[in-house]
Amino acid sequence: MSEHSKEFETLDPQDWEQSKALMHKMVDDAFNYVQNVRDRKIWQEMPKDVLNTFKTSLPQQPSNAGDVYKELHDNVLPYPMGNIHPRFWAWYMGSGTISGVMGDFWASILNPNLGGGNHAGHKVEEQVINWIKEIIEFPKSASGLLVSGGSMANYTALAVARNVKAGYDIRAEGLKENNLVFYGSTEIHSCNTKAVELLGLGTKGLRKIEINEDYTINIEALKTQIKEDKANGLQPICIIGTSGTVNTGAVDDLNAIADICEQENLWFHVDGAIGAIAMLSNTIKPQLKGIERADSVALDLHKWLHMPFEAGCVVIKDNAGHKNTFSLIPEYLEKNTRGLAAGENWFSEYGLQLSRRFRALKVWMSLKEHGSERFGRMITRNVDQAHYLGQLIAQNNLLELIAPIGMDIVCFRYNPGGLNLEDLNALNKEIKLQIEERSIALPGYTTLNGVYCIRVAISSHRVTYADFDEFVNSVLRIGKTLI
Image 1 (cartoon, one colour):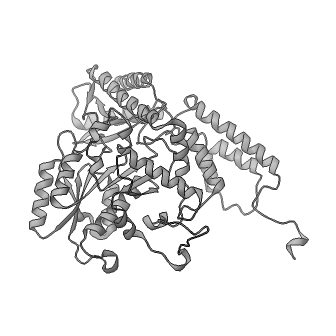
Image 2 (cartoon, rainbow, N blue to C red):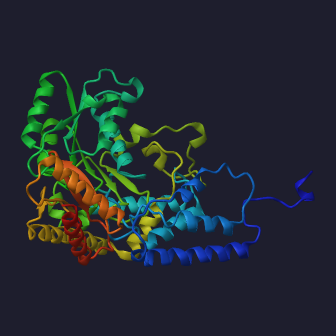
Image 3 (tube, rainbow, N blue to C red):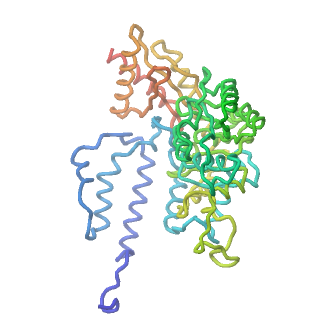
C-alpha cells in the first residue's frame, strides 16, 4: 500500500493546537515548580506503588500525550534529587536558571549536532569558550571545548598532557614504556584517577602527594617525589593542581605548582571543576592566583554558574597539541570551503565525541541575561554564607568545625562531649540522616582523619542566611533528642 492511500504517519503531533496547549500548560507548571520550590519537600522516598510504575514493559502502542504528562506529574516531579532547592548542600551542584532552561529548550528545538559545520550553533559555542578564556585569563589563542562535566574536562586535558609530554608520537606507537607519571594531592577528585587509568598508565601513574593541615598539596613533598621518580627512571609529565577540593574546598598553591612545572618542564593542569569559575568573585579571585599560568583548566558550568546539566568546559593553551590529540577526519567528514561542511576547527577534532549537544546556548543566554558580575556576586554571597555558618558553629559549644572553611564548604560535627570517636561518628551520621529524612535540608558528609563530618557545600543562588539559622537549630534539636 502506498503512502498516498493512507494517512501519512510521522512523529509530529496529530493535532498541533492540542499539543501546543499541553506545552503551554507544561511551561506554566514548570515556572510554578521553580518559583514555589520552597513549598515542596526538598526530597522524599518514593513509595512502593510509584516504584512499581518504573517496572512496566516497553510501551509498544501510542499513548495520549496528556496521559504521559500526568504520569510525569504524579510519579516523577514529586521525587526530585532536590538540587534546585535552596537547602541542597549535599553535593556541589548548581540550582539552574530560567534562561538556561530556555536555552536547553531551543537547543532541543534546533537540535543541531555540534560536532562541526558552518552554522550559528558553532559560533555560539566558540563565543562561550572565548568568554570562559576571558574569565580565567587565558590567551585568545587557546583552544576549548564544552563537555559533559568536570570528569570529561579533566580526562580531555590529561590526554593532551600525556600526548604532548610523552616525547614521541603516542597516537601512532601507543605506550612504549609505562613510565609516565602524573601528580596530585591525596584530596584530588577521583575522576583524575579514572582518567590516568584510562590513559593506560594505571593507578600507579598518579602519584598522590600528602597534604598540609589546610588540605592543600604539600609543595615540598611534591618536589621530593618528583626528584625520587626521576632518579628511578620514571618520566614526570604533569602536575594536577586543584582549585576547590571536594571535601573542604581547599585551593592548592597554584603559583608554587606553576613554578615547579616551569623548572621541570611539566604540564600544569588545574582541576577547577568546583572553583575555577570563582574567578568571577572579587573575594575568591585572589586565592586562585596562578590559574592563568596553567596549561589547561577544567571547569564545571553546572556548578557555580548554575547551568542546567550537563555543562563542563576544558580550555587548553596548546591549541595544536589539543587538536593533534583528538583530530581524525575520515572522508565523510572532510571539510569544504563553501556550504554547510565549511569551517575550520570543528569541535569533533578536539574531543572524543562526534555527536555533541548544543550545550553552549543555555550558557550564552544566561550570561547575556545576567552578566558575569551578577554571577560573581552570587558566588561571593555563598562564600559569605559559609563563613556565617562557621560563626554559628563557633558560637555554640556543642558544635565543632572540623576543617578550615574552603571557599564555600563547611565541615563540622555535633559534639556534646563524653563520647568516643565511634559513637560521635554514629551520632553525627544519624543527625545528618534525620535532617534529610525530615526534609529540613540536604547536607552532605565526608570523613576527615577518621572524623565523620556533616559537610555543607553552599552553591545555591536561592539560599538565604536564615536557612542556616534554622539548619543549625535543627542540628542542635535533633542532637539533643538523640543524646
